[in-house]
Amino acid sequence: MVATAVYLESGRKRVFACALDWPGWCRSGKAEEAALQTLAAYVPRYASVVELADLDAAGFRANAGDAFEVRERLAGNATTDFGAPAAFAAADAEPVTKEQAGRSTALLRACWAYFDRVVAAAPAGLRKGPRGGGRDRDKIAAHVLGAETAYARKVGVKLREPAIGDIGAIEAHRDAIAAVLEAPSDGTVPVPKGWPVRYAIRRLGWHVLDHAWEIEDRSG
Image (cartoon, rainbow, N blue to C red; front, side, top):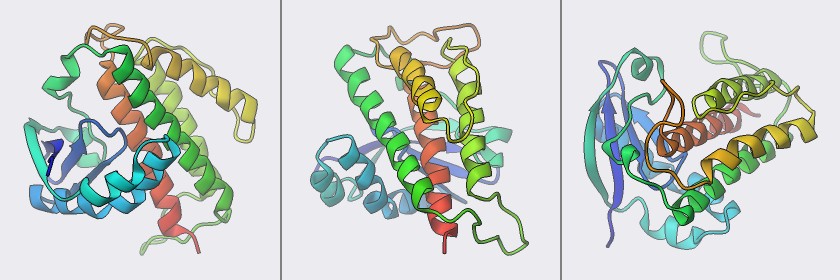
């Protein structure tokens, strides 16, 4: 059995468990064990992303959540407790080969494809939370596009946020981001105060899937 490499990012209220080699597969819990258990529980859902990336979804589904190897424990911050993974892992400073970048970017594109499929199938109005909160479908989709416009600047890509429903503009937006991320990297941040490529792909994938799964959970 080959254990899945993960890191744990711990804030005061929340712990994220994130797979280093599977962008977007990242879940949280109140403590380390809870975060790892939730990560394992999402294997079947993330397997759909692996399948869209034309990778071995059956092998992933059968083995990925059986054992985890914690490579690193990171100190989180206010962003962690707010609900987003924010810390760079040591591995993020490592060089990225063309093959590695291509595989990771293929998974990110699969996250986008999964999100689009979920949005297309969801009702416009989503079930509210216990206190009546939560965005509806189109507001979530707009939020994801807006966040990606901001995230793109972290890797040196300045874009205009596309409008919801403008498929051509959205595809061009994603292609511009992917063009940077799928290139080999020496591991340094591409712009001052930016994000390493490995982290950028994980953060983008996590954000897309986090909201895709939210839409799924709140539909119907």
